[in-house]
Length: 107
Image (cartoon, rainbow, N blue to C red; front, side, top):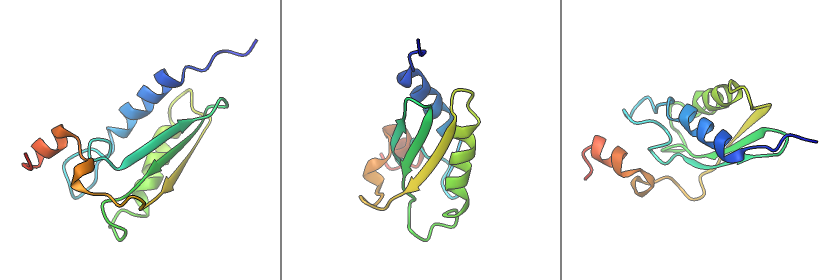
């Protein structure tokens, strides 16, 4: 019998890893910034992260998705990871967590 995949537990581990990745221009992690739109985990432990960047010509447009992919792949339970960048909807400050807004003095 196949082992039941605990997507919630894995999802939490992925979020924990995402919170270690920072936008180099803003002292807030990419999760709290609201750059992560969706995390999908398949029954094969393949992970797909749908994320955005603060701007389309963000200086880390090349490196940030790779960092996300590498860190998610480094989790024991994850077989493979893929990052898809989207600008629909475009990122705005409204997507930031209360904590991130507080950190940046927006509240």
